[in-house]
Amino acid sequence: MKIKKLPETELELMLALWEADKSVQRNYFNTKFSNKGWSDSTILTMLSRLQEKGFITCEKSGNKNIYSPAISRDEYMQVENNSFLSRLHKGSIKHFVASLADNDELSASDIDELEQLLKELKGK
Amino acid sequence: MKIKKLPETELELMLALWEADKSVQRNYFNTKFSNKGWSDSTILTMLSRLQEKGFITCEKSGNKNIYSPAISRDEYMQVENNSFLSRLHKGSIKHFVASLADNDELSASDIDELEQLLKELKGK
DNA sequence: GATTATATTCTACAGCTGTCGAAGGAAAAT
DNA sequence: ATTTTCCTTCGACAGCTGTAGAATATAATC
Image 1 (cartoon, rainbow over the protein chains, first blue to last red):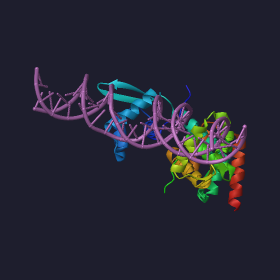
Image 2 (image 1 turned 180 degrees about the vertical axis):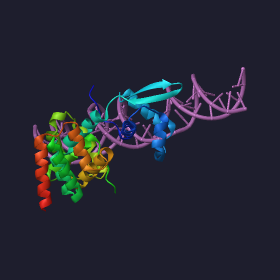
Image 3 (image 1 turned 30 degrees about the horizontal axis):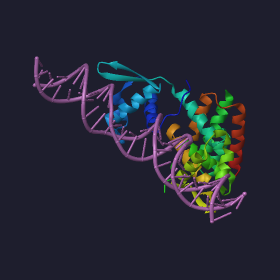
Image 4 (image 1 turned 90 degrees about the vertical axis):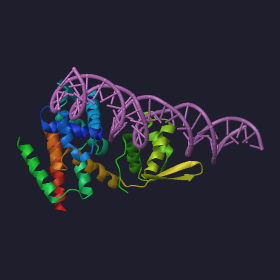
């Protein structure tokens, strides 16, 4: 029952589904990803793979499929967050932020926002 | 000349190579990854793929290969860091930290360390 | 120099991903 | 009831990954 990381395209669909925050039908993805030039088949294949993998459930309404998430965004985020930190930053958020700073990818406003956020978190 | 993300196992080799911080021969990886149970062939295949992809260079010394990185750790980290943030956290480190907090994956000491680091960064 | 031990290169293959077109079934339009 | 239109399910296929045995080249040993 361990959650695995999804390949890129399947993840995009999941993110869209979580964002919808309700059950949707295939068409939702079509419009959402109209820019990608994916054929209906492509989207349906990805959805059925997500289903096999246990990320979504699918029920029929007439001839149409209705999709719902079977795994929550938070559950999945945990997997991705941990995987990222442990693979690349010794499992520590501090190392990650330091890495961003090393590469000049941390702006002054990023720093301010972060400090602000940390202050709030401590308040709890 | 855009750097692409590496698959898991190739990345592990690269990380090891960067860590070595000098040119190494195949044997280095063997000992480093003795726990993985990889055969010599497996390691050599991955190395040759890394070479094709332009991540390392390889020169011969007698019948032995000597490998060196052709892409720096920092360059690569930038790719991974940005990809991670943009794919999953709206491109913002703040959102990422917030996500960790939401999932109770940010300990008090993480927070302290981070604040400390940010303070130092501002000092520059 | 012939034989034995090593290291590398080639070839292979199954499973996963990204992408569909073709085939089949239900709904809508005539 | 028939035709047309949608929608979904079924293959399909090429490229990428993980993994390694077989074949080959090079070095070491007798």
